[in-house]
Amino acid sequence: HPKKLLRAIVEDGDHLTKLSEQHIYSADQFDRDTLLQLFRLAAKYEANPDRFTTSLNGQILISAFYEPSTRTRLSFESAWHRLGGDIMSITDRSTTGIAKGESLRDVAEMFNNYGDCVVLRDSKGESVREMMEALRIPIINAGNGTDEHPTQAMADLYTIFKWRPDLVSDEPGKPLNLVLVGFPAKMRTVRSLLKLLCYFPEVFSKVTVVNDKKKNQMFEAGQLEHLEEFGLNVQTADDLYDVLPEADVVYINAISWEGNSFKQYGKSYHLDADSPLKSDAIILHPLARGEELSTSLDNTPHNWYFSQARGAVFLRMALLTCLVKRAERVLDVI
Ligand code: CP
Image (tube, rainbow, N blue to C red):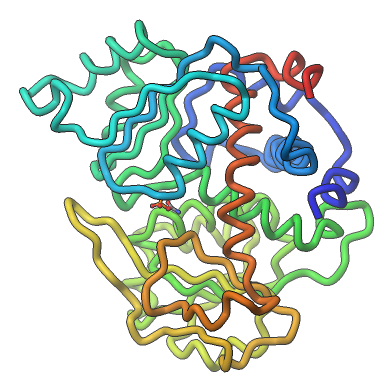
C-alpha cells in the first residue's frame, strides 16, 4: 500500500522545503499540496522500513509530554531514532522547574540551548503558543488539551490514502462516505481531522458526525460553518446503526482530555465484529480504545486502526525531517 500511494502522488519537493524550521501547532496551517508531499515522503519511508537514515545525526529532540501518551510519544521518539537523532525525554512536569513556578517561556528559552526540535503534549490548550513565543527551534503540538492534535489527523488521512491511493491520483474512484463518531467541540483528534478533511472536499461525498448531543452542542461556535465553507458535506446523526451500513470509513473516538483528567463520551456507541458494516469498510481509531471498539474486530479486514498507529511513525519521520533539515537534503538521503 505505501508503494501504491508513492506512485499516485507526483513529487514536488518545493512544498516540503517550506516546512523547514516551522512550528506545527494546528491543522489549519497546512494546504493540500504540502500534505500530499508529506504523505508521499511518509510512504517512501514506510516502503523501506528497515532502511534507517542518518539525516538527523547529531540533532537532539526534546520530547516533553506533560500528559499521558503511548502512541504519540513513542512514535515520535521511534521516528527520531530511525532518523539517527538523539532524544531527551520529559514525562512528568513535576521533575522540571515548572513545579517551582517556572514559566513556560523560560523553559522554552532553555530548550533553545539544549535541543533542535521540541514535541510537546500538554493538557493546557495555550501551552504550545506560550512556548512558541520564546522558541527559536521548531515545536510540534502533540495534543494540547481539547484543542488540536494535528499530527494524529495527518496520520489518519495518510491511512485513508494508503487504503485508497486512487483518491489522490489522476483517476480518482468513488468518493468516500465517512462516519465519524466523536465530539468535535471537545475532542482534539476529531477537531484536527475535520480541519484536514477541508483540504480534500472532493474525496468525501459525505461526513456524518455521530453524537448523542444536539447539533448545536456537538460543534463549537463557527466550527460547522467553517467546514461547510470549504465545501464539506457535513451531516449529523445520533443513531450509529442508522448510518453505519453505508459507511466506507468509520472513525471512532470516545476519549477527551479535559483539564486534568479524561472524560469518556459516547458510551452508547459500540463497534464489534457483528456491527452492520459494509464488507469493505475500514475502521480508524486514534486509540487508546475503550468499550466503543471491541477486540473482536482486531482480526477482521475492518481493522485499519493498527495500521494507522504504525503509519504514524513514518508520517512523523517525514514531518520531522522537513522541519529540522532542509527537505531537499533529506530527499537526497532516502
Ligand atoms: N492517538 C494518541 O494521541 O494516542 P496517545 O494518547 O497514546 O499518544
